[in-house]
Amino acid sequence: MKRVLAIPYLLWMVVFVILPISFMIYYSFNDMSGNLTLQNYAEFLSSNYLKMTLNSFWYAFLITVITLLISYPLALVISRLKHKTFWLLIIIIPTWINILLKTYAFIGILGINGVVNTIFETIGLTQIQLLFSDFAFITVAVYIFIPFMVLPIFNSINGINKNLISASYDLGASKWETLTRVIFPLSLEGVKSGIQITFIPALSLFMLSRLVAGNKVVTLGTAIEQQFLINENWGMGSTVGVFLILFMVFVMLATRTKKESV
Amino acid sequence: MTEIRLQNIHQYFDDAHILKNIDFTFSEGKFYTILGPSGCGKTTLLKIIGGFVNPTSGDLYFGDKKMNDIPANKRQVNTVFQDYALFPHLNVYENVAFGLKIKKVSKSERDERIKEALRFTNLTDFKERDIESLSGGQKQRVAIARAIVNEPDILLLDESLSALDHNLRVEMQYELKELQQKLGITFIFVTHDQEEALALSDEILVMDRGHIVQAGSPKDIYDEPLNRYVADFIGESNIVEGEMLEDGKVSIYGRAYECVDGGVKRGTPVEVMVRPEDIILKPAGEGHLNVTVDSILFRGVHYEICVLDEDGYEWVIHTTQRSEEGKKVSIYFDKENMHIMVPGEKEEEFNERLESYEGIL
Ligand SMILES: Nc1ncnc2c1ncn2[C@@H]1O[C@H](COP(=O)(O)OP(=O)(O)OP(=O)(O)O)[C@@H](O)[C@H]1O
Ligand SMILES: [Mg+2]
Image (cartoon, rainbow over all chains, first blue to last red; front, side):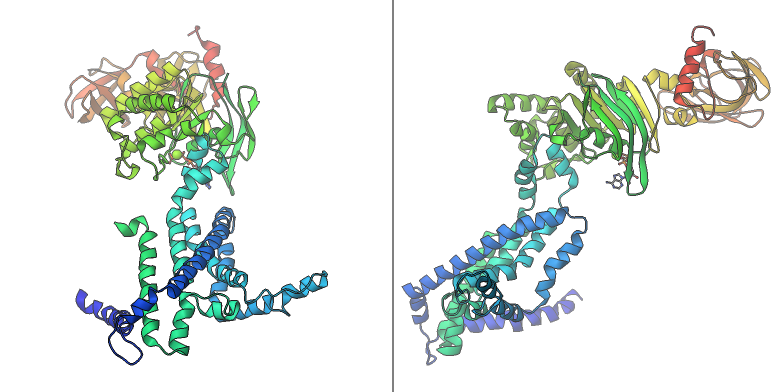
């Protein structure tokens, strides 16, 4: 009976996870004319792609750190508010809007005739090119990831037994000491999930980089898009994909939470 | 120096009136026990003293210092929380070390004090253990160690021995009492266990629905409970309706008895309490009332015998005398062992009345 119930999920896994990944691995050993080769891997390990990899990691790192720096205090404040579910909802609502729409909205805000520049102009500053810069890329990415980071952190802070906080004060700890010695360590699981949920997608952002960063930001995500859609070199695209998956697995393992490791 | 004074404290949570006009002074260096049924506000009272709840109205003083606006971390108070509240990310040793580290106590002194606290709580072998791996009783002892290692002026203990087995509990009771006497600090101990309260306390506070009903030494509370509520809460009791005839005379079921209470107007309906262990079984006809033995229960130290008098009222007797079910006997009690309670009397009126005839009767 149990086996019968598992069949739909197994089918799903095979069709949508195992088969695509197998195809990808297979393609990654093909050159453009379909012959088996290791050339793609050799090329990936050449300086160009390594630089791209480093670039991807660097941007993903920046995005994650900035998102965390904004989200942690935000989650902490929300957990103290009276109507916390309401405020949480306010933070979460933007995730219901399509990413593409949000990105275009940012183009409207940051563009040369956008809101920010209009304000700059009226207060007598010169217009500056905000769009198509790594600044714009990081801003938009951080904006998009904040809710995903806030949610797990909020949940873990909110789950801390109030008496533990009382106990910390009871033992003489100030607010700051309570934050660093009790609240933060006890919300670490939430922080880890938040990092996973931000860092991994941030590694492979490509649409954002194209639309907001122009060609200023070249990452593994944009490389894959380039290989598949422009160079039509499926083999190379797959190779980059394989590495991306390896990196993700690595990040997952590195930020593994306690419960998962048991 | 650290007398704790609660002045007209009221506590509301939303609309619920949880503490009602608490007016009490805890003197320095005594062992207090708060007794009361679940939900009567014991924990809330401790939280007000500890600084985790701000009273809706009323003032809290430590000595002459008003404490209402002093945050918990600035009070010389440590608490053993009802749910232990141990830090799950720290092991036993680190939990106990928490307060000392915050106070920047030097490493050598810290180690010394922690060692002593762990020894006191029988936890020396557990110091490297994770909190999650401890049993309830072990957690409770870690919580005690974590509090006492700070050598506070006031220690609040919220049902802190409830999870221990009988032997360990008795052992910890002795040790706590000893510790309290050694340190000379004020203990405020919440418990459900009246024997524990009687054994440990210098003073017992009996609470009911947000009030302190009666406070006094264990002996006062046991021998002279204010009313039926206190009498039933502490120990077991036989309570019968009576009527005051004059000072030193009370009538029960129309029969006059000598007693040692007074200060009550003639004809006042009263309740007469006799503790089960103060009743003596005598051969039929020789005691106050003739009774029939209804049931006998062996309780280890004594028998618990239920008897029915001729009017059908039930009396409970604790005695080491043997008897048999259905046997006709009689019960007797000394006048000193009868305690007269006036329904509706307040604690102050009661204390005044006791003082008014002290030494006379
Ligand atoms: N923070 C709070 N918000 C709302 N109600 C509360 C709060 N804390 C306590 N109460 C209520 O106040 C009442 C008294 O609670 P308290 O914890 O003081 O009882 P207690 O005497 O310690 O009971 P127990 O013996 O079960 O521990 C309870 O009805 C409880 O529900
Ligand atoms: Mg309680």
